[in-house]
Length: 546
Image (cartoon, rainbow, N blue to C red; front, side, top):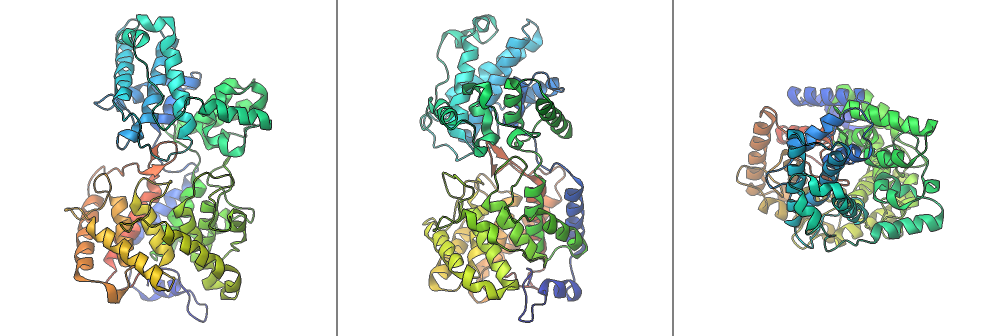
């Protein structure tokens, strides 16, 4: 057994495992070092965002490090002229952001030398790449794309309209000829429609702070929201806010925070900062479930004690409290024997399932799976609360099963890969009895077995260590009597793949997580991979149970 569960006397079986089961020292050491690094980092381990970096370059030319940001844009443009990670639909927003930023630099710093030619050529190639994207998607369900995309299309065309553009190398034809258009599935009027609601309400709702740059140009100065440091934890939103805000102590705090974030990430900017709450909860959950590592339990308990909030938990400062982070705080607290009341989740309960945040447009399966896991974990410590929470557990479980895809997997708006959502849902449902749940779990297992690549990996766009870790955890949750030789063969091949990947110098986890664009929270991903490798190594000694 690799997860913190409790026997009938209430004793932590995780403690018993630490005392009586030999651990794999390499994995324990890696997990311990990872937790120590996360604990020491006040910002979070995440790669910079092309989209955010370009937005700050365009709207905050006064921020130190502009040349670094220009070089980053020029050096990361793909051969086809686009920018960003993932398949073509994911490249729409970062490419729009980069093209607009390059045009902004050209118009701020006109010249005729080689640097101007290189920038103009990059902008022209980016414009051509935009024309080659699908005309109508389908587009990924990333944060506020419905306002960010049309806002940037308008901004790019406004820069192309300026008379000086005609004189820039490579860009004359774009000044005179066809322009980028708002792709099908988006609406040019969306930013103004959202801004109109803000004007009518007399303010900008908190849920728009993180993507404020999408409506900033449509709002008067009198409706600028208050910012305490980064607005909505977003460098792009903060830069747009600072460009419109009058000089004040509040603006200076935001500017100072923006400069600090840029310094932490080498002149570039992430999609959100700091992500320490989000990061610590996901890291702690992944490693605690695998029984790793005993030496770091005091740190994990410190996180559990400090991150839980009876008013609800927010993943980063400046965002709304949400069910996902709140559920993970309850889950982690229970896993490390610090159970906390799941009552803060109640405000998100819409009677069918949990909304991820108040005012949510589309539900999150992974957030509901985390809530289900949290309630299960809490009830192991407090079985007397079953009469309160069991009806909710069953209702949410039914909702999850209803949203399983015919092929056997689940998808979610916070992650590009179905392996993430499927692992979360399988983990949440594996404690529940009943033929319907068992059927859903069998279908998920069959889907995973059918999707393994020749090299032993899993992944939607090619095999990755992260997605392989999720697939491994799904297969390890198959009850022993139902395991077939195919399970063993698949797990053996996965273990070899993960071992090879871990030994590959400079290995880089692909960006698969959804915010405004794809991003890669590296410590969180690594925690999942370390946990999976440990579970694989010990699978003949232990049984991984929900």
